[in-house]
Image (tube, rainbow, N blue to C red):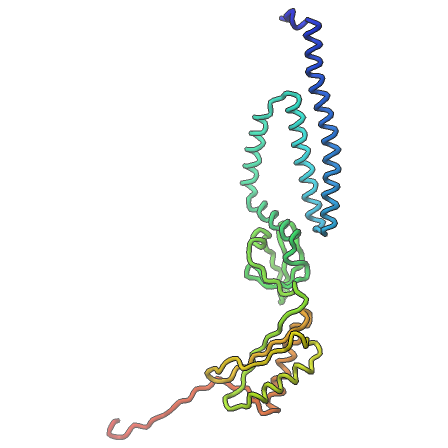
Length: 277
């Protein structure tokens, strides 16, 4: 039954003004918010491009951000119209929690992928050691990173574990120190060994003169004298220098009378007297 009050022109006018203002305000918020989201996403896109963020991260994060902002905007507009959204938000939160728990591992790998692609602890073609594997980074994806080992095996590592674990990057720095440990026998002239090693180092132009190469007596072991050698070179030349020096030392030491000792043990035999047999 329609009451007389509902037919009152003044009441209808007040009602129209009240809801008209709410509807107008809601439409204004929707339009301004929609345009603001568009420009905000563009600005963030430019910032990410400027910081050289991986395109796969940009392609995933920006649409996700756009959707989240539009959902917030629509909820704000609905609230402005006077619609109660508490129960709706509760349902949305519960659904989000359930989805998050169901996809916990996947979301962890995604977050790890974003961290790796943004912070760049390693890049494609870097040689790293992580999660018990050593190899060259072949591909960095949002959820996994693919390594190629030195014997051409493919290793797929989840980004969640990778981002939260220890990573040893062998090629991140442009220079590396090359270390050797050479052995000579007891009674050998140590100064001659030092002279030979320094000559071999000076002859290799790939080795830096600064920092200055280091040659020293490291230890007097059970069967040999240990000599330590440390030089600096570019990361690119590391292994070539390492293997070349091993070969040169192996060939040069015998020429200088510097034999490479073998593990040895002295055995003393005592003959027992007949009466003790």
